[in-house]
Length: 170
Picture 1 (tube, rainbow, N blue to C red):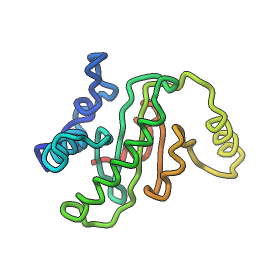
Picture 2: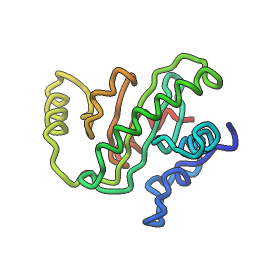
Picture 3: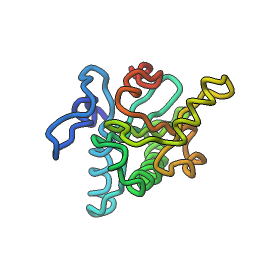
Picture 4: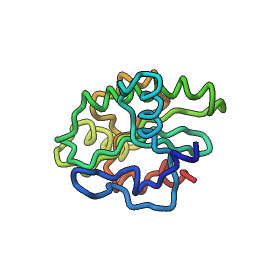
């Protein structure tokens, strides 16, 4: 697995914009796209699955991270949902061989910035401030994938950097 080791800077690199969404060069992740491409070139004869960009672990969670270096309104929801499904399917096969330890599986989408108002975001903040719940909105229609993951997070890059999930990555 060491050959797939990468930094956030490398894994979040956007070729079309010639820039990275994340700047951290110290924390290591698995380049899940590279791993998926290699597996699919062998087992699926090049017909690729749609996977997240990175895989990381905390003490209690597995994090599947997709980087979108674009505004929220520009992100293709269907593409994100396909990644959520294909990622966990491939991982379930890999888990039997490499990662047998039981942990929570968390799907994360990190995007450039929020450029549109969101009712779910406003509702979540209002409920959080009132003390009724502490949560984050789930965007892109990913709610239906909650049976496949223990948690789903959709965050702009600044929120991800300050999140407890990011801080726990070793």
